[in-house]
Image 1 (tube, one colour):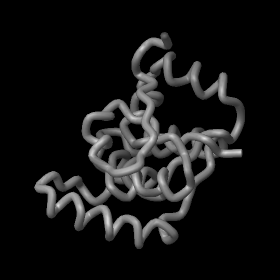
Image 2: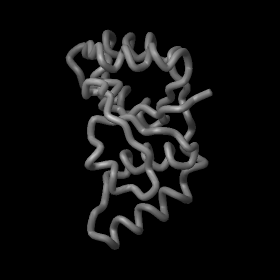
Image 3: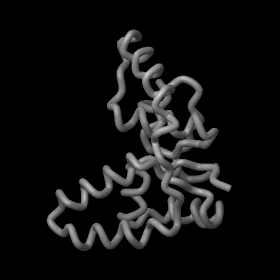
Length: 135
């Protein structure tokens, strides 16, 4: 059963060798972590933009069997409501971040990010930062 949704920055940290993130994923167990289709898009764009696209696409391919990729279609209504709420409050978020955050809310998942201050503006979100040592 999926319990955690990884933000793009966490996956990138994992690709860069973060043992803290790798250890947390290992402790959770197989297929307890997911990514949004949005994260997959961001990873693919980053790979294409890099100086070594084939290498980065290979990292992504190696990673994908370890997570569940969640579609975004069922988060559209909450995304729209949160986008307008945040705009009216004067604290808008980038659409991709808001889509990832609302995907976590709709599925009752903990969103794992190293940018908790940014994501905490989303109403009802559960957050963890795996880039910090466990307490």
